[in-house]
Length: 366
Ligand code: GAL
Image 1 (tube, rainbow, N blue to C red):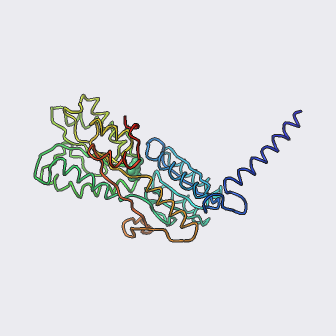
Image 2: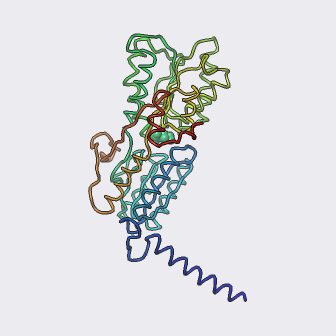
Image 3: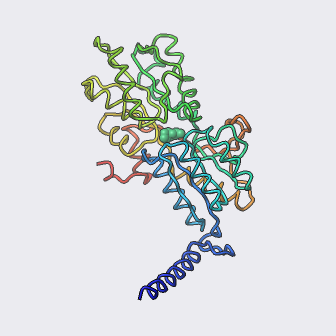
């Protein structure tokens, strides 16, 4: 009886393997199953599921690549740098034909990516540039400096800075120092706002404006909350008004808002202008309720589309569409890039940009 069970199990496993090989497009002769991917394997390494955007990025990439007949190995490393290194090494061992990488620490993958190159596996940097490596073919991203410019211009307009209004008390937050995007964003932001700090229209009571002081490792909400708590208790206890907090990411904005709430600030009373990035679902709800003022919408559907065309091109030996060949020097090469366009959203245009565009359904925002 036992033997029979084992036999049946073995036969079943055989059938299942045959089905998997057939329907996944992964047959030995690489016959295309759906689309023209021919069952080639694409490893997609994503940083974390702790923020909504990366979950959407991963899901979009998987769906679009599978629709073209590729086999997708999607991995999240939960912001553990070493785990991401291991995941990439495993993808290489498991026969990946192409890698798409959104890094945690953009300089920490040099050795793993060198292995990819040694195995002739093309690598595409997704959203975050891969630094210090020549093992990267293309980069799909948003105009990261443009994100900072959008935030800066929004603040300039809302506060009437160009018309000479002020002085306003503001505090600044930046993103993760090991993420190239954080530096580009910060450059774009200060290019717009530095002059108003210099002429006194923007006052920073903490005097904290340099990147190394205002940065937030891993873009962490908790770290941002602690820093905001310290700023409130250190510089705003004498009743000094806080007019704006410049945040580079919705997750950081949540931390800032939590610290403000904890200190008794109230929306509609003494709540400051708060910026953000990614137009996450919660951030959009916060924009509607007034807890956050704006965010920068980066349509991950467009980013995934562009990235998928890059995967297809490298696997078919073709040139993908790129629109930037100068901005992204990773210390080894200037990586040919496609920059998608970010859009500032607030309570006046979220309906058009986020709902009418189908990014969110109206009832998700209730
Ligand atoms: C950056 C990205 C931002 C935000 C941040 C935190 O690399 O450009 O849009 O998502 O990571 O996840």
